[in-house]
Amino acid sequence: MAEISMRQMLEAGVHFGHQTRYWNPKMAPYIFGARNNIHIINLEHTLPLYRRACEFIKQVVADGGRVLFVGTKRSAREAIRREAERCGMPYVSHRWLGGMLTNFKTIRQSIKRLEEIEAMEEDGSVEQLTKKELQGLRREKDKLERSLGGIKDMNSLPDAIFVIDVGHEKIAVHEARILGIPVVGVVDTNCSPDEVDYVIPGNDDAMRAAQLYAAGIADAVLAGKEAIPAVPAGEDDFVELDEEGKPRPRAAKTRAGAGRARPARKKRTSRTAAVSKDGDAPAADDAAPEPVPADAAPAAEPAPADAAPAAKPETPAGAKPDPDAGTAAAAAGDAPASEA
Image (cartoon, rainbow, N blue to C red; front, top):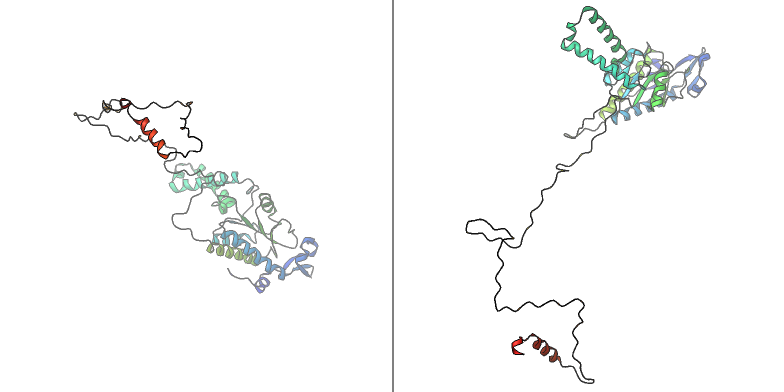
């Protein structure tokens, strides 16, 4: 970003204000004095404020924002258009249309109409029109191009606006204040700095001064673009905009296969069905039970839940318990009935 010195501001006439009888008392902190009934602006205040505004513009662009250049005065019109095109930013240099920011939806419709006329000229559809219709179409295109040609590629509201002569562009400044858009403005001695966020006190009538302001802001924009970090390949996303130029909400991402019914798993069995002679496996319910030997002892019946536990054998008082007695009793109980 090119540094601007105080000598360059003196050569461009930035220090010249308006006549003393037209001054605004709110600009008194920025006025050095008066000479021949003309206020002289203190460049010791102008230079640091100008650099501060350039740093703000650089940060806005580095964060991915856009800056709208506004200057419809005859002395600033050409400088605004040339410098805005050099840095690739939208601009308004002919006339500020009421609602260009606050009624951006309607402005977008007019821009779409301009794009439709340009598309008709490219594909040759205008050749089918009569001479009178073609003349009216060209007149409509010239009017739209003059008013909206600078913001044709502005798909959404800007993140900041740069204004030369906030008194002449008071409608643009007021709309930006309503929407909360920061304003960087050149304020002369006959204007109020209340509605400007980043004040640049200086001459707003000289062509050389307007060229100096616009060139410095354009250089700050280019420096901000260079500071934007590169996006890795494969991670750039496209944002879809609605009719008002605002990004549409994204649909929630779902995992692949989410919402699908999972197939039921087959139950595993511990035994394998025998295969018949024909090669067909019989069903589990039709399988023959295993044979039981004839001399097998019948299974013991389970004891009822309310049955009392077996009583232990009594031992006389003072006698020691025989450890083999319990083993013998258990063996006697397990003996077959035939031996009893």
